[in-house]
Length: 496
Image (cartoon, rainbow, N blue to C red; front, side, top):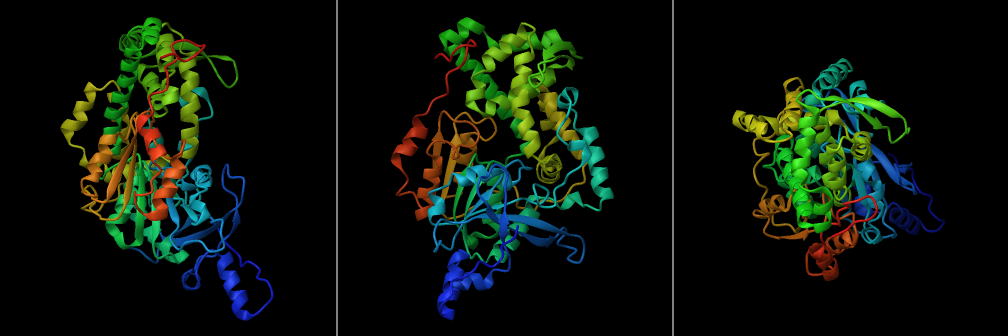
């Protein structure tokens, strides 16, 4: 996105130059180094204009004269004429989410923007950065398509379509993304910046610190995915654990247990009722109100349930949803699942997800670990996703990509105590080689904490000083003392 020159007021040449540089949001030295032009642009769900531009880079850096792609950059300017020289860079998750989709979160960082720009860069293959769009992975239009949980045929179609367009999907990896970020930093004339990474974005942040430690002033890692984590495999275990924790919370609640009994047994009833091959059920489409007949399998039910554990408030409805399904009514579960998965599908690039995970995660999965997925409720789902890498063109990860990252810079680690994919133990693992770090656990929160409650204030206090001495104690205490939201044992009200 792209920034024309801003007008200056009349006066001496020195005054005009100084004012122009202030309005551009950088010092004279930085402005001289900036090569990226920015212009007003609009981002999704952002009421005000951002300043945007595109940095051109080689798709394959081993072939500098080959195909080139554009990396989309959006700057939310600081609310001052003299912003600090070290902006905050937002690194999105997934892999597959575009940073521009996080514009509403970035706009909430009001205290950060009092003194610093906030920068959003779409990862190559996402958003407006040479997106890996293909017909096979477009969000499903019909109900039956939304229930399709076999990604392999679509992956084959997508890989073929992208190859026919001359796209080398093997070049869309974390290592390539780190190189792109360096190109963006240089184009912006930024000597050093602060990082905020969420989920997979924490992997990116750590990889960037490993490669360019001198370019990072501080880092906030929210929902930490340390380098050792295999996203394609480990997520299935932690999701199942989170689901079991919801069932345990129901057992511990007199109201929930009285209303729904043992939820693990109810889920097993659903499995037996649907049988190994599934069966036809009737549900009400929540968007149209019309009844539809669907071929439903137990794996489809699990694929609908698990995403609800990401948000504790939605997980609170799981007891009622599972109990209704066990009684043969799948409508509420279907409606809740579509509410979550529909938004995710619109924001995520499945092709970029496979390019990253097939290159970096799947090669680290041993055959016995793959066999062990048979012990999981969602084992078939796990194997279906992993099978995509048999057909997807693979890049290479650096030899040290899965090793711990050691750094002395200030790092604020944040975890949701109820997070089903990046539990607090992952942050503790990363902290072992980050001696200048502090870990804040939000006991009653799920996946990604800092956009909620006082989280933006916590980020601002940490980034302002690049340290922990001025962290707001009341905010840290709020997160530490938070508890799981009440479960909904009936349709009228939550109860303890």
